[in-house]
Length: 453
Image: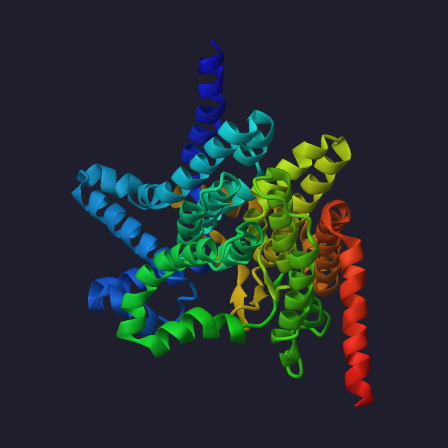
């Protein structure tokens, strides 16, 4: 009976994910992703960086979408005519999302096997997990490989851990934040060199063809895009942009100020955090601290980014065992993943007005973005919902839209305040404050000596 119960715990949320998440994806991102497919079909896959307007991902992300999309497209082509006319677009979304759903379920299964249902249930029914599954992003796959890599480091399998972390980084950069953890627990230089090699290997293998084909385009799209983009969404550096009504002139300094702040604090945490070999608690909470720090000080923080740290935070929350920690994490997640995006898009969609997308520094019609994100079978319901609010709550929508600059800034401040609270609660138990005091004294002495010269 227990085996059946265990089986159902995983199967039920997996079926729910598979049967509901096909109804939507984020049209703003998807329209760029489909351009990758068009270029790959027309001119070859190696030209996706040189011939598309935007491709700010490491190679495995566009490769996965292109392959998934083409497979879905070919399956639909082979389907009977009746099925094509009824299910073509909905079915395409479902097939394209299969790798994300598999990675999501696999991550939950790993957490269940290693930590039990008390942790895994927060993953399977977690709001960030479902948000990313609905909107379509590559984060679940990246998180899956990063989590595998971390467990391998905990178990002492550093070579395999390096490979998994490298594969995750070949989708998105974030697992690279975890890499230095290996240098804290590996004692020999040979082990550290091997670990580094196995991290770099998947990144190099997947990137080399594109680098050799057009190194300038690859670097420009993958790195240049992120360097030049303005602060976005939930980033604290977006607050000045909101309060100035997106008058970006003179705010270019926001693009780079976060880097020295983050690197300084990263080094402080790295050298003072109490990390112990083969100790899961210290590993998970160190990773939580580093990723939370990145979220707090990065100039770009989208609602889906909380997923990067989510497996480690739900472990921390369960470890603490008190209701206050569960409420803290839940309120933080709801505010960032549901609250801010709803305040940004929904009033504007009801009023058929534009919203400012910081990534492009341009205005987009919110209603078009929202409606095009849903399949035809659900779009009718969304239209009716918009119409109802336009008739029955128009004044409230006008107020929210008109005052979004202030409301949005306050929401960002509150959300990041909650993230900071979680970070502080972790650091106060695992940071060596004596070391920090020692480093500060050394720094002040160095500054004083250099000043007196």
